[in-house]
Amino acid sequence: MKAMILAAGKGTRVRPITYTIPKPLIPILQKPVMEFLLELLRQHGFDQIMVNVSHLANEIENYFRDGQRFGVQIAYSFEGRIVDGALVGEAIGSAGGMRKIQDFSPFFDDTFVVLCGDALIDLDLTAAVKWHKAKGAIATVIMKSVPREEVSSYGIVVTDELGRVKAFQEKPKVEEALSTNISTGIYIFEPEVLNYIPSGQQYDIGSQLFPKLVEMNAPFYGLVMDFEWVDIGKVPDYWQAIRSVLLGEIKNVDIPGHEVAPGIYTGLNVAVNWDKVDIKGPVYIGGMTRIEDGAKIVGPTMIGPNCWICGGATVDNSVIFEYSRLGPGVRLVDKLVFGRYCVDKTGASIDVQAAALDWLITDTRQVLPSQPAIERQAIAELLGIEAS
Image 1 (cartoon, rainbow, N blue to C red):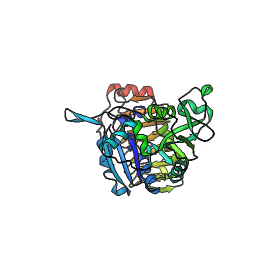
Image 2: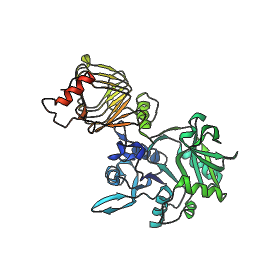
Image 3: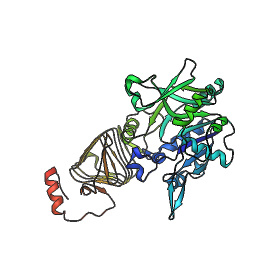
Image 4: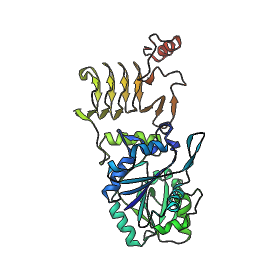
């Protein structure tokens, strides 16, 4: 059976992570989110998978290749061009990407599913496809019901008593929402739907194709299902996803590594004196990471591989990406550290290099000066920490 994963977006709301990592490769405890999608698709018999790529396309293609090691077949549809020897992504929209594949050669010849490449889901796709076929639908959008106070964060789907889609509302005000059912970016289509997507132009599924189907009174349905769905649309969503995994709230994601103490998981060769640090789980520490004596780590926290947490530093309810060095006395609470950026749980970020604070949070592969500069010493005194 055939499927498509939408992986061409720039992920602007997940910056700074997506400056260098495309959204489908964002790691959930060292495993890319799109890899979980491939496992789900394979589990339900979808083993021929098209992926449209654009932003950082090479990263996605080089990781997943032809899909062989994941038990599926994968091919890629690149959206963009080469400018001065460099690939420049030019995404053509979710529906436009589908049409481009079909125009190249008719790939979609039977019922197929389309998934966004940036969400953790645990959905019974087999049951969803069965329902779609029983309705005689040309298109089905999978929905979830959310508390009314959350509707303004999502695209709302309005259906009649038979499940037929009547209207959409994009992030309505709470008092104006006509439904509490949201679109999850999971779709089931018949090949005929491609006849309603124009060739050679940018075209979106949610904002253009679906309203057209409603206007035509096509057999277009919405199905509410109860399943785990973690949408990594913004940096705070990612921070919350890692928390949820560590707290055991997402059933289909296991914490990797070895459990060295209740709630404390590590990768290979972590350098730490367990009796000289204060660690409260749930915590994951990646391989080849050093935790100096006197450090304090409070879960739920993830510290990536090859990190260095200096003595006196505190990491509380935070996510630290690989090769991060936290200087002596640094205190991080509800933060995400990615390269030269420190992001709080609202998504606001600080470029520690531009702020001349890169000696507090820096790359473990960088050689630090033996003597701190006068400016560093002054800042350290103001912050009440050591400048070494």
